[in-house]
Image 1 (cartoon, rainbow, N blue to C red):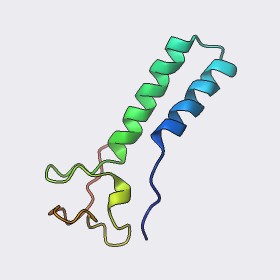
Image 2: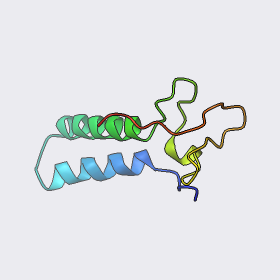
Image 3: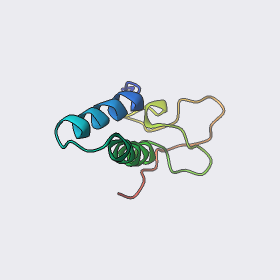
Image 4: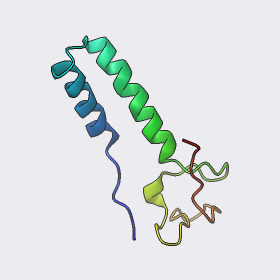
Amino acid sequence: MIEKGFDFGRLYRKIVRYYLTKHHYTKEKANMIAQSVVRKEMRLRTCQNSDCSHLLYDHLRNYQSCLVGDCKCQRFQRAEA
């Protein structure tokens, strides 16, 4: 199974809108929170293999091998939470 690409921009916009409307934070503070959440999601969805560094949706889910042709990654390595 191939995973659909993750839209980090959409997540960013949703987080900013949430903190602006629900918590009445300033725009700067909402942007800081959104940036930290998106950075964390990006780190969690990036292969931690030093030879690879491709996103999760570039790997086959069942076999966890990389779809990029010239990549030698055999397995998706998750980041520590």
